[in-house]
Length: 221
Length: 258
Image (cartoon, rainbow over all chains, first blue to last red; front, side, top):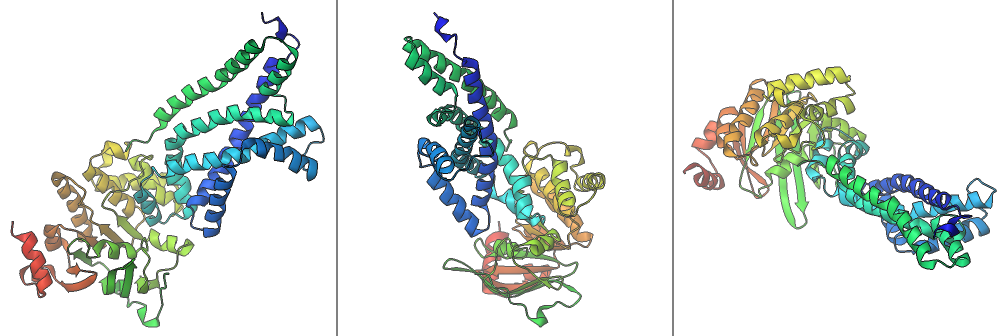
């Protein structure tokens, strides 16, 4: 029944999916945290920038962002992300697009976490003589991250599935392979099922594990 | 919107630690502090009392600029309060503050709460900071709780930790913003005792409170506020037995006779 799979690199395709997910996740976590810091910060210009960024980026379809990475950055502006090989370049551009898009959601998840930290604790930290960066880094964000594990898990699962959009610019991940198989083989239902199960294998354990982490690190009040 | 003007004569004489000169503050249309003049001498314990909404807490919070002021001047140890930034952070480190709701850092142990300021602001050595923290926790009577998290402590214990956390910075002055108002009645005394000990040790203290017993026994001076103004200030004996203003008489008659 599964004979047709011979000749297709199913594992390799899912490995690309995993790489896309992990790299964009790390990147968007860093960029999203910076955005969240700007949004709660004292500098009006940064607050304005971060607010505008989040509201613009999260409202643009991901497909448009990914296509722009390829057509706009690569084809028009010749930005290759440090690689002359088209395949590598497209992969990196996809990571960039996913990262910029997902960071908006990370920022908002974190901001909801920041809102769980009583404002009095930040005041107490300021009263001790800590500066803004220290108040944020030592008191507010450590508690905000713990509270945000749940919402961030949702973002990560969405990101995992969103990586399929990278197929639009020819990154050979799972959805790209699916399209290829659908074109060449007859077992349409089976192909869809295999890809669906593959994604579940990635996201279900992620959700279960991070759910456990969320409980474990929750701050008692 | 804040404008802190600095005039030469504001520089305090050697005995004056905290000086407020014609301080005004509005919350929208509400004129919450109206031309406040207040001078606190080194080693003095000043208790601020008054009805709710009279501006006592706001007054307390302006002294380390958790609330900014609209006009007037505040100096601490001869230095005017700077704008938000590094200078202000340095000055805040010298002003200890204890809040009504304790505000301990929930993700850190009691010991870490007391060490944080020393290590990150004073750049103290970790070992020395820990020694000092443990000594302070012993002093306020919660030494055995050092490794617990704030949520595992009673309100009275948490507030004593908060006092230790402020003391760890070796502050020049301590601000208490209704430190016992959120406590169960049986825990109020354990906190007041610590504060009384501090007063006896010569700490300069500004205490916003509803505890008249504490005002009587520990204060050098009682400041009575109503409607954003300082209505009356005098020694506690005189204030409680023979208040001059009608507003204070009315206030005392409501709280003392039941």
